[in-house]
Image (cartoon, rainbow, N blue to C red; front, side):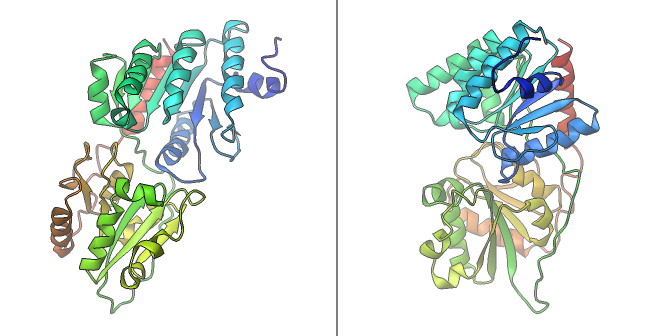
Length: 359
């Protein structure tokens, strides 16, 4: 047997016996992409699909190998994949890359042209729209010349844009997959309390992310609504500023902000009267669907396409954000599972897996 790379051979020899190889982040920390992949692996296991994940983080487990974000891993994986496919002729393998950085476009251009066209790519953001002219043109050129079998976007805006570039090879599929396991956690609320609880979810708590996530709108809202309590769920504690709320808010506001780092939003979502997503930049908002699927009403900015059932306010418009928050909190009845049906996005993913594997 030909060994793919010295030092990598044993691991890669075993991995390439699998049918599907995934590349992307896995919890911890808990972010939109890592949660999506965690649940996707459960779906693949239920469907009896043979898979292995290369995790961008440090967690390792059954069928999961950690790359620990090392750049040399990408080179090693490219060479190992090339040898396995071209020399050992393991052509049954389907690759699924979860893309979120610009350099990955260039990597996948070469991968899909030199290694395999049995490649599924999921683009997890709308950052392409925010790139400078020349940089955006280079990325678009790379996408146009990729030989990937399918490109999935979690953003409808991006999917509509790519339809003119790679018609027939792109699909819009939101990244929401219903959790297979739920562990509801109740946050005690005093019986005589007149507080109203809202929740918001962000990836990173840092000064340069405040505007992007619309946290300034949330902090102002707390100033104007003394009964309001904000539960802020943050995925990446390691790269967050734990003192941001203290430095940004007055004492009266910050004592009504409760920060939860690297916690599973699904476990807590049932405690809240309202979920808000005031992001000025966004791609879809999986946490929105998470809330709606648990019967919690959602107010979100109109910066991008949102899930059905979401109440929208004009992006960055605090007056409208405030008015609609007040209106929604005044309603006595919750939505009670507004999106309880029509959320079988995992079936669309499984169909793509089966189609590409049989191509």
